[in-house]
Image (cartoon, rainbow, N blue to C red; front, side, top):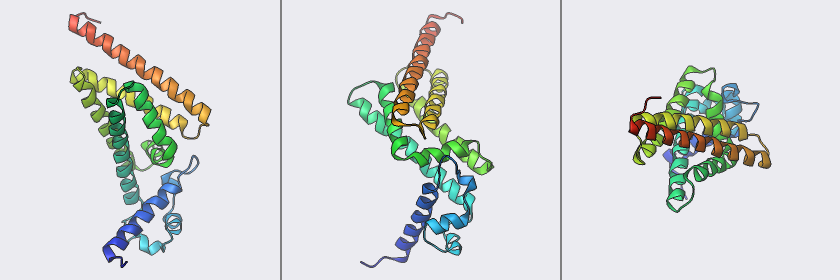
Length: 207
């Protein structure tokens, strides 16, 4: 079957993105990757890279966009599982941990570049995490919380989940289970505190 020029270009672009993701590890962040390393992994000439991306930062921003989309898809997957029954928090954490186990370098990119040396990537990662917080805020609002309380709860929960995810990246299976259990406990504490706060606020008691 003949492949059009546009299809070939998209395949090469995809190969570059996948090559960059494959090279990430506990000791190698995106910022430490060189264009030549990515080109070699993608099996293209370094000069061909520029037909698809202006520079490594543009590639990094594309990766962050894809990782952010993956995060939001995780949340939607978790919601579908929740609709079939089961604990909201437990199901959400399990879904997130499954994602990290199957696609560690997607989360690794977000974790590393969240405090990386490139301002553009830091800003992009912060934006994607904020999208995640906003989507969770909307979900919490839908179960009866006001916007301010829901946002505070969502921020705290995302912080717990991201910390657990970062810790589990290079953990052994047994350790990963312990991390997941601890995250579930912490999230339940947050949810319980939020529920208590709502009850106090409804009664008009000052804290």
